[in-house]
Length: 178
Image (cartoon, rainbow, N blue to C red):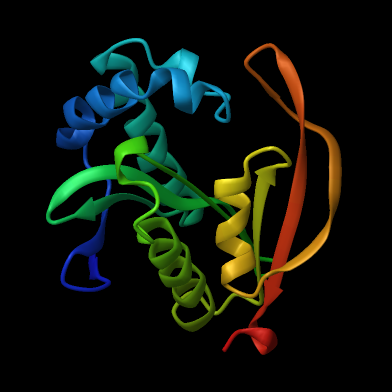
């Protein structure tokens, strides 16, 4: 699967062959990503990245969970996808990360828009959520730009880098999506 978002930005399903590039990106941005992502410290080698990708395949096979690499000018710059899909309640949660050097270009906002739209139009889901740490203003700006509603604060929602982080929960339902 490949989705062209515009001339520069696209998404493709993650593949095992993407492991070396993804590992390199993570390693180069480890200090920055570690501040917000709990799984960064578990990716210590290319082999760990391959195991992560194999787990993505399992999620796809078991539950239709889609994990993609973000492409900018055909170069992998991050990952985005659905953290989970609750088919019974027609709900999903979007997660994303991008190399620090590509932030501020609107790439992740386009990606989140595309994944939201895909969830409603193609997967026929009714609700999409995005959670972001209270202090992660860059990540929080994305659902806010896309018209998600701030639904609440989840106290000590995630253990990251030896501390608990509170999250802001954003949600949007299909009938509110424009």
